Image (tube, rainbow, N blue to C red; front, side, top):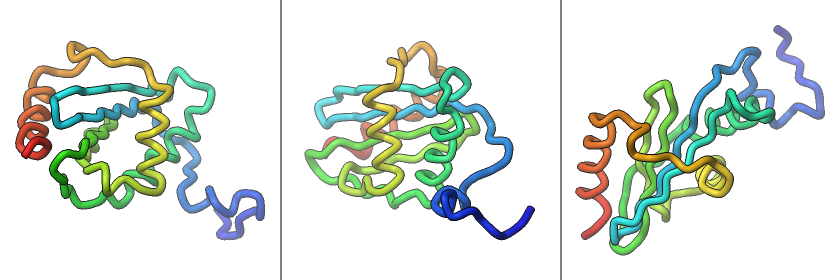
Length: 133
């Protein structure tokens, strides 16, 4: 593979892969009153799968520190491969903000039953420990 990149692909080149894996991206917004909004994008079911996958790679390449602030929502983002991050609203920026915003805006609703009981229980412990002060 050549290191020369076409001018029209200069932005996407560092993150592009020949064969992206099909993944599910799940984003959850947790308000301090316990209200949760959870949405999912299954890249196998969308025509824009490669764009979603590239955005997820960029967004999760360098996860921000988890620094929750009193009275502000936190976000949990996960991929099928086991990648998970918790991020406070004040630390959402760049590709991570784009990913969370897009998944929550146009993703499919996810019921708690679709997540394994173990993952959900472990997740809820982290949320309760970090969100409400």
